Amino acid sequence: AEGGRAPPGSVSRRMVMEELYANASMANALWGALSFGSNESVACADLCRAVAKYIGGVTQLPPSNDRACYNTAVGGVACDLDVSLASLRNISFAGDLPNHHGDAKSMGTLGVQARGRFKHVRNQQLGVVRNSNISLASEGPAGHTLRTLVERVANVFHIYPVPGLEKPFLNTGLGPDKVHDTACLTSVSRVSQKAKVWVSSVISKVQRQETRPHMHTWFGATAAATRKEVLRVLNSIEAVMTNFRYVFLPPHPDACDDTTYAFVMADGLVRCNEATLRTAECRTDSAGRKVVYLCNLYCQSSEKVQVETLTHESSHHLPADTDDVPPEPYGREDCLNMARDRPQAAIRNADNYCFYVMDVIHNLGSGQRRRRRGSRCPNAASRQCGSTPCSCSDDMVKVNEGGCVHCIKRCPSAASGACDELACGCAPGERKVNEDGCFYCSS
Image 1 (spheres, rainbow, N blue to C red):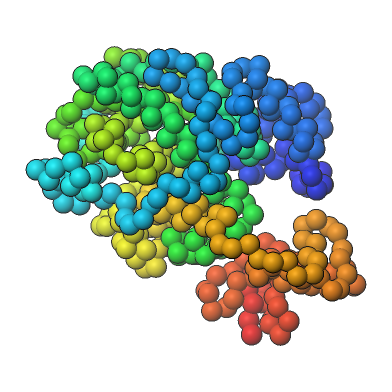
Image 2 (cartoon, rainbow, N blue to C red):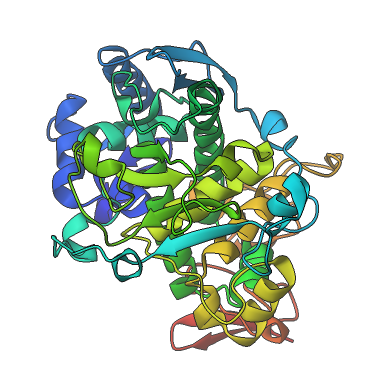
């Protein structure tokens, strides 16, 4: 595994660190737990088998790929949730997301849902005394434990065990309506798995650099620095969803009013016991799980709103630490304008990530399959050579290096205003321009 990269069909420790934002000690712990010893890289099939074996020794394995396990309200585990691409794309996100603006009181349930708010609460807003100086750096790149890292690797192979590989637990932070909350408790476990699979699928697309148009739309750039930050935030969101605690709260004018879906205490109290959790002041529970507070409006909302709520709130927790960037942080039009006019703000705005994830997911597998005409040239990453005649897909260009023909990713055009720091090529008749190590094509 030269330079930490693995040969085709293999995965190295370095790749785990880079692509899942794990630190070296956690990657080494993973390798040890899976009995890979001093091998720097392993075959993908061996990694998949080892991860499945580890999960089976800790908790229940799902019956097949693209079936997810989740905690039930009675303290059990079910593994019947369809999280296949076809199922996820059936969650319709036509129109806008809920936004914070306007007074939703006296509007009725539908009006409230349309105008509901999320909250990214800082401890000063509720008078909480901070008792921790935990920083982004001390939490680690994505807040992994060994079990959550195993789960993240399993997700790459479309294996979705119960989040955190934890034993089932009963949520004791229920509001007064026990029957309603019990049903919502099982629902949030299912919805959180769907949301996590959404984010995991998009991470894979970002790693393959297949989201450039959407990235430019929602963040105003596609350069390596932008991709790196988007990947960091998405990994953090998935890490939170892998190991988080949801707490239902009764109605309260300062926390869960009738226009609020959910909120987090991004810099609240840590290691809270069950009694303290119900004060709405906690960042983590006694097990160190990130806390998301859910209000009655969340339980009354559609699945699409619930998915977006959990994604939005998870992004507020460290280490992602997104914000609701003023003056207009919500809504498709305002987020598009932010990406166009203030890309440095868009890269920090929670709803920009939500719109980005939605749009990428709904383009996965969409469109008609093209009829294959002739053979495809091998991808340059495969280190194999083809011979003419062969062709490349629209987002690739064919290059001939000393008789070795292969496809390489197309560099951005000069007109796009973007450039790429990774290997890319230009079509015949175009000139490849190197601007401080970032490449684009000029006619």
